[in-house]
Structures are given as structure tokens and as C-alpha cells.
Image (cartoon, rainbow, N blue to C red; front, top):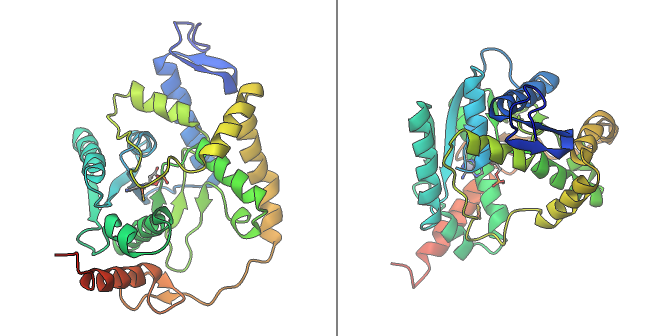
Length: 308
Ligand code: AMP
Ligand code: FES
Ligand code: ZN
């Protein structure tokens, strides 16, 4: 197979686009998709500082590299979850990557913040992944606001977005459907959240990481039963195989025609937000959810006879 652009031998086949690229032309294609996402949805304005949430996986590290190559002012943020073995391995990949590319990195250690995920798992009676997601999002936003970043970027790719959209559609969850997309504008205490990789599939971000020699953390979280929305992703892989281009058509169609309709749906007007009494994060309940979790964990840990 030959590269569609330059006719040298192709290295990456992209059935969704009915094409194949050599290494260099794939890189141009990848950059083009990121630039298109940024331009179309006004993800980053000139001069803005971008905080990039880095898990150590292919998506977030690839995103960081691409945004830095495009000349954006980027800083990495890693949340060390404190899970034995797994967290130190992920963190080492993030630190190694940032050091190798001369990129600035902030690390939040949940152990130091009194909320290591193993304690959340042990003492809090709710699915650990949902509590963990809430804690991570809390720290993404908190660091962005405390340190003056206008934008918070995550590495969600097209497969993540399509699987989430599909799940929200299956439930006809109007609240989520009015909000889902590559850009969530800043509002009352929340930084703008962006997903510049939303046009690129998981396969494409994996190719980008591989072709750029990025060392990534691949082991799944020991507490999760596998990646999120795995079943939905499998269904979509099948659809995409039978009808290439289905994923981006579904997602782009939603952004153009679905979301505006849902935006009309009156959103539940929750209680007004005010800064958390302890940490300053926006909340409607005096103390924010994460501060309340931290208090619950510390009380239960203190009362645990098996704990030294
Ligand atoms: P996931 O929900 O694990 O697929 O992660 C989605 C995105 O959240 C990743 O692409 C990262 O941008 C960000 N992320 C996940 N885990 C972490 C972490 N421990 N520290 C920083 N960012 C993270
Ligand atoms: Fe949060 Fe596994 S419980 S990543
Ligand atoms: Zn708080």
C-alpha cells in the first residue's frame, strides 16, 4: 500500500478515511485534525495557558506533545492516585516524558492530600472509579484555577467520546446531551475544559505515540474491571468496520444537529454555587464533595483498629 499523499510505502492504514499514510504524512494528518478541532470549536485562544491532564497513557502524552509542537503554552498535571505499584509506574512515565521534552509538570499526590485511592476504596461505600473520577476532576479544576490556567485539556479521543455519547443517548439523558462536546466553556469557578483529540480514534492516537517514540503506561488500573464503556466501544468497532466513518459522522452530526436541540431543553437549575469553605472549589453544599470525602476517609481511618 502506498501513502495517498506522497506515494512512498504507507505505514498507517486508515479505513475510516479510506486512505493510508507514510510516517511523515500521518503526522501532518494528525496535526491537521487537532488544528481543525481547535479552530472549529475555539478551544484555545492566542496567549492562553493550557493545563494538560497527563495520565501517562498514549492519548494524554500524545496530546501534550502535539500542543507543544503547535506552539501552545502547555503545562502538564499528573494526579498520583497512590495505588501501590500502578501509580508509581504511571507517574514515572509522565515524569520521564516531560523531562525528555523539556515540558513543565505539576504533580498532585493524593496521599499527601489525605485521599489516596486505596483508602477511598476501603472506607467509602461507593464504586471506587466514580469517586476517583470525581477526585481527579476536582484537582484538574482546582490547579487550573489556583494557578491561573484559562484552559484544561484532557486526552479523550473519538472512541471515548462516541462511547460516552452513545451511553447518554441510550438513556436520553438530556442534561448530559446538552453539555457533551469538545469544549465546555468556563463558568462560575470552572476553567474551560477541552478535548482537542476528539476527531482522532484510539488507533490513531496509539499510532502517533508509537511513531513518536513516546513511552506510555499501558497497564489498566487494578481497581477497574477494564476500560470504561468497553461494551459500547466493541459495538462501535463493529459498526465502523462495516461502515467506515460512522463514528465521526455520529459525533459531528450530534454536535451540529443534536446538541443545539438539547441546549433548548431547560436545564435543571441547581442551587447557586459558592466557593467550598475549605478548599475554595465551586459547590452548592458549603463543603465540596471532595472535602467531605476527605473528612469521611480520615474519620474512618482513625477508627479502624487494623490501621497502624
Ligand atoms: P480516562 O478517564 O482514564 O480515560 O482518562 C481520560 C483523560 O483524563 C486522560 O486522557 C487524561 O487527560 C486525564 N487523566 C486520567 N487520569 C489522570 C491522572 N491520574 N492524572 C492526570 N490526568 C489524568
Ligand atoms: Fe481511578 Fe482506577 S480507580 S483510575
Ligand atoms: Zn472543598
